[in-house]
Image 1 (tube, rainbow, N blue to C red):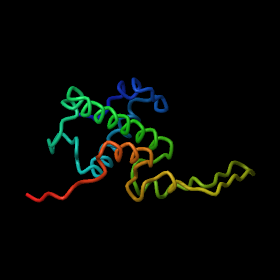
Image 2 (image 1 turned 120 degrees about the horizontal axis):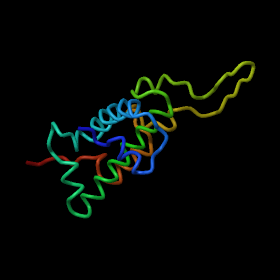
Image 3 (image 1 turned 90 degrees about the vertical axis):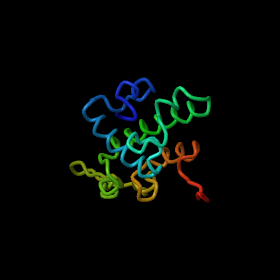
Length: 142
């Protein structure tokens, strides 16, 4: 089951991706990257936490689940904007210049400024995940 359906994506106010097939591809890639980064926090196979249960849970759990869904939507938009949905694909994008005919436009920044380390996640997505506590883990003493 997808973390975020195309209809939920649109209900959250996102509109960049209009094709459901393209959205599904980006959403699957976003799931993979977010799962790796959050140590499979909401992954159904791991079953540590349920996104569905959290949406119906306490105020904090519902907030965390909603923000998690917003992070998935933002990551899908990021993948669509940069034209790649893997960390290597993003790293290989040369978004610092473009040439159309005889016109050449170059800026002094690159995609690495919007990408968190080598994760393939947008910095905004990481900011959301960090704020809801999914970017760090404590050491278990049991």
